[in-house]
Amino acid sequence: MKETIQKDTKFDILPILSERYSPRVFSELPISETELRSLFEAGRWAPSSYNRQPWRVIWGIRGSKTYQRILNCLSEFNRSWASNAPALLLNAYKTTTEDGKENFHALHDLGLFMGNVSAQAQHLGIALHQMAGVDHESAKKEFQFPEEYHVATAVAVGYYGGNVNDLPEDLREEENPETRTRMLQREFTFNGNFQNEPGLNSSNQESITT
Ligand SMILES: Cc1cc2nc3c(=O)[nH]c(=O)nc-3n(C[C@H](O)[C@H](O)[C@H](O)COP(=O)(O)O)c2cc1C
Image 1 (cartoon, rainbow, N blue to C red):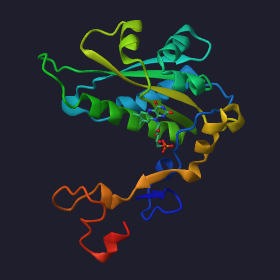
Image 2: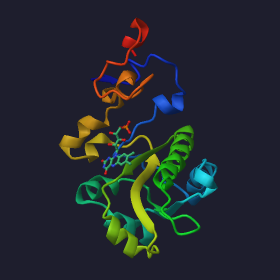
Image 3: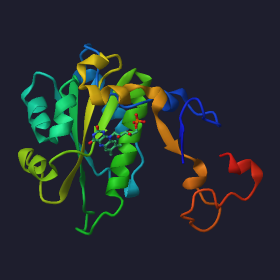
Image 4: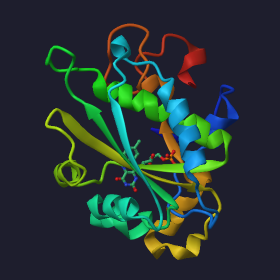
């Protein structure tokens, strides 16, 4: 069961959360290193398990060699639109702890890092589009990450406000933030045991609409 956000949101949330979406076109306005540094600074203060801060970011601004190298690591689909972005990031995380054991929470921490980056970006009017569609192994080699690092995602960065007509026809529809959908809360929050059936955990009438 899905509902569209904004129209159907039943609880007040911060505008930087409700207004964010992931476009595939961006304004012509450039993104500077200073703007990227402000995003990274927000990420820098994210919490992480044992304060290990396992996130690592390669960044490139359009026109630079690094930008082109990141673009080359993307899947064919993502390459088809991500070159609209004034800046690209490649995110990796350290998979091990100080004593060489697996850091089970590293990917979680990279997600928190990106949560902070995303909030800061939205505050500045900057849009992000995160991408799992990356050739992870070749990106790891291309940027000479040591063995214990995993490349996880790439991110397109640019100001909101691109021209939707710059996209192939099948992608234009997805640019409308009004059509974004989400699961209902009762499908993923459980006030007791995990339940795999949507709606079954609702213990009172009030939460049935949630
Ligand atoms: C970790 C992650 C990986 C994603 N991978 C891709 C991707 O490879 N290509 C793409 O076009 N969108 C990708 N997305 C964007 C999601 O499809 C998008 O966030 C989701 O549909 C919700 O839309 P919204 O961000 O506009 O709310 C990814 C998002 C995340 C967080």
